[in-house]
Amino acid sequence: MLNSGPVAGGVITITNNAVASITNAATGLGDFYGISNSGTTFSTLEITNNTYTNNFISASTGVIGLIYNTGAVSTVINSINMSNNLIGATTSSVSSTGSFLGIYNNGSSCGSLNLNSNTITNITSYKPEYKPDFKLYIFGYCRRRFL
Image (cartoon, rainbow, N blue to C red; front, side, top):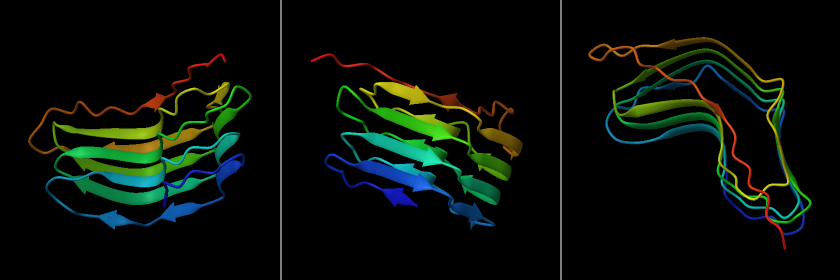
């Protein structure tokens, strides 16, 4: 599920979606994103109440991002809210050069960033030829811009 379009003066809302029982067995190069936003807005970004469960994702290299935002909110009074999301019963097979990101935000210039009440449970990593250095991130970045 991808949003990449900008919204002028409005709200981007990605809410109440279910991504369930997906198998991505692709090998080789490439990234996989479950719910992804790269669109910018001048007001608010809401990624809330989404469920990502019972999925298998395999990638030799690249990023696996289950709830992933790189879109900026670009005015002084604004917010990014990534709350009440569930990631569960997910199996990932990434190589040593791949990354697994459960909930990721790198949307810059936000007035407030809320990453709360998210649940990440029952995650399995399988890397047959590499040591288990599986990483799960809940990452937030926010830089206030003054005019």
